[in-house]
Length: 157
Image: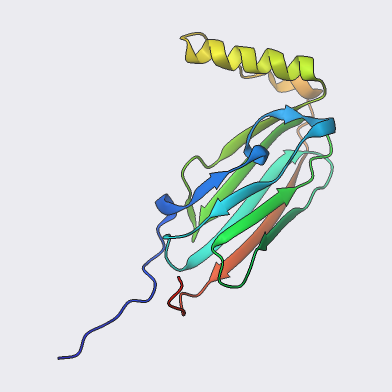
């Protein structure tokens, strides 16, 4: 009797893992903006990365180690301190943890103050959301965008 062999399943955003220094808070001068999206087991689909941050254009770079690799190295180049919002989607659905709100500070002292506030929030205090004018009140945002697709046509997927 005939049977269907599915080489790659339907897209499953819940299987995508995102990790690396680029989704953590940091200091602008020494910031490591790279992060990794591991799409193994997520089926065929399209990875989209959209980053919104303070004014000043920046790019999103995406590359994979090899054609068969399901691990994508992503990088962006923040040009000034502020809140960067990283939306990472697999075939239109947010991956676990997305959107990521990444705070980038001018000084180590500001970062330490922020991290101390986060720790206090986890201990039952108030979450450290800076006021809107914390970074000069700029409401101008730039958006960086990148995407990659997998068609699901090879057994390695």
